[in-house]
Length: 73
Image 1 (spheres, rainbow, N blue to C red):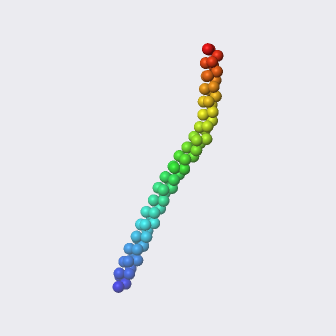
Image 2: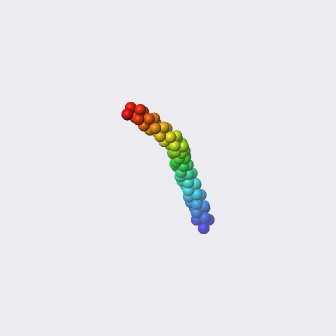
Image 3: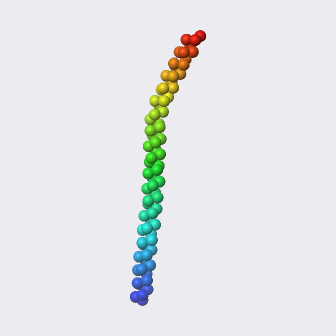
């Protein structure tokens, strides 16, 4: 009877250790993926902030081209 309890405690302890190690590694992978996604979102947000500026510059260039074309005619 005592041997069964000791074996059960050892098995439980080893199982708990395995689960903790597995969860630790899984958490590390999740953290890495989350950091990568955060970097990509920040990069996208930076791009989204710059696009209106580029669009305005294109609009100005188109007006200048139109003015130059009208000057030739």
